[in-house]
Image 1 (tube, rainbow, N blue to C red):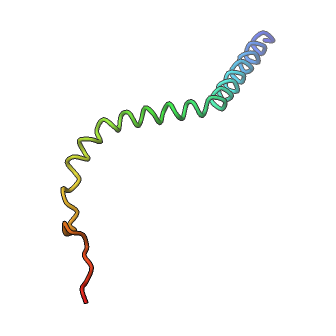
Image 2 (cartoon, rainbow, N blue to C red):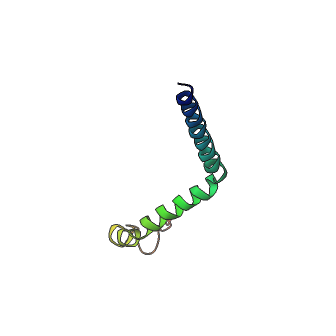
Image 3 (spheres, rainbow, N blue to C red):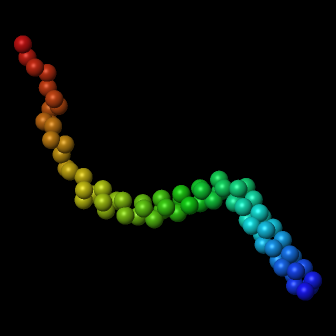
Length: 73
């Protein structure tokens, strides 16, 4: 019975150390991980942006070609 309790205690210790170690690694590397994810998202989104920009933007803004003009008195 004592051997079973010892195995469970050692297993619990190993799991606890693994969780603390993983958390510490993520905490130390958080800036690198965030920048990596940002670059992956920007790369995946930037591929579809040129097609969207070309088709969704109007060719004119609706303003007269000479500008807004100044009223004459």
